[in-house]
Length: 63
Image (cartoon, rainbow, N blue to C red; front, side, top):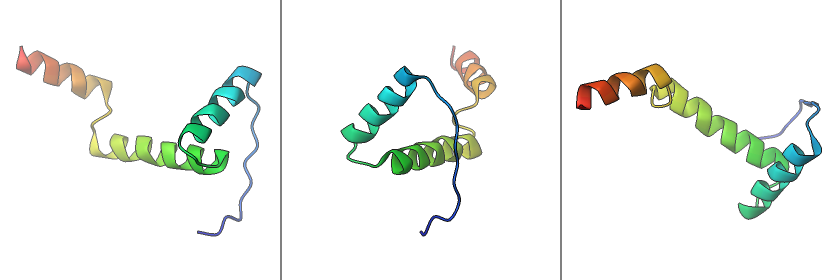
């Protein structure tokens, strides 16, 4: 996918260091790491597997 948009935001030096470190662990560029990670989070949200209220409800039902 060809990228045509630019996104700029400010973060702390520690946050940036951690992002770069995590991207390097997965052998990804920083952009690819952020995009992939956010897509995974959004996918979980869409399926409802990451909703705190739903997790609490499931915990109560299993007790």
